[in-house]
Picture 1 (cartoon, helix red, strand yellow):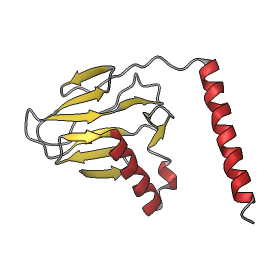
Picture 2 (tube, one colour):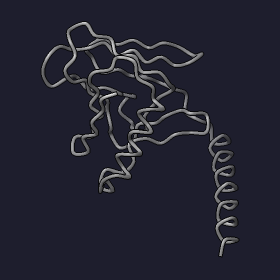
Picture 3 (tube, helix red, strand yellow):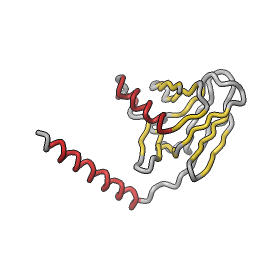
Picture 4 (cartoon, helix red, strand yellow):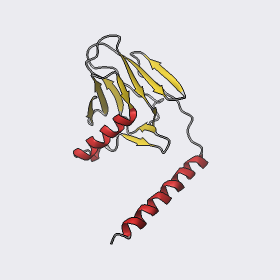
Length: 151
């Protein structure tokens, strides 16, 4: 899988492969963040316990070097934290446009051609947010207790 993380433009540049997994892209983004001084770009993704991936801080997918009519399949559940109508892609700078196909397991398949893709997911309720925050706080306390016990 050929991925380039362009922090200045907030683009995840995809080339070569046409079958991609959001879990693999997420792992690559974390490796990129760990391997370089990327603090100014923040984290590319946030991920929920249900493996719903959220593009953050304006990051978008961008194709590079694909032939006309190419379909790029991304598998996984994805949304964005931006208030931009859930735009997930930007067109290629040069060359032919591609079709993005977002395959959401057991939910839906979303298809878009050269236009940016918009995805809408119902936002979580306040009760769901509080529940996830409580769960994460409990996990963090357990980790802190385990680390404290090592000293």
